Length: 138
Image (cartoon, rainbow, N blue to C red; front, top):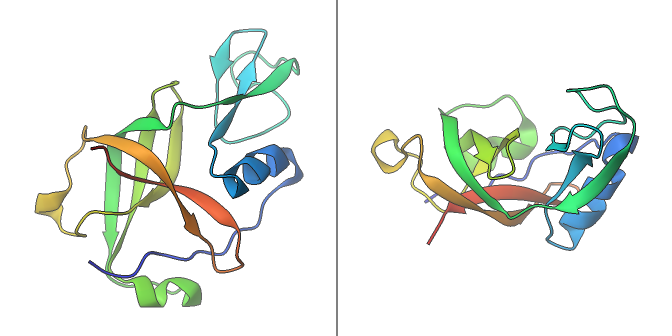
């Protein structure tokens, strides 16, 4: 397997709680009290109903692979040493989809399957921040 990707992170103020939780190796999601749904990416208004009555809840950390891309080249300097690496769109158990990295699996099409069960893990970004990634469950 190749080196784990170490991306650059530029968090928004709405995501401060998300990044603080990641530094503790916890996956937190915004939850709307108005329509009772989780969502991602973090923002100050629910994308489903427009409510501002939000709270942060700890996610299960379980997901299913929805889609993926194996990168053999990158123009991002901080990721060049990690080529090939896998970016993924995962469906969290709580419902929302999240763009992330898939780690702990060979970056080969035959080793990765849409629908495969995943669990959260945490990797270090180029700036030292901790970011959630996903690996095969079990």
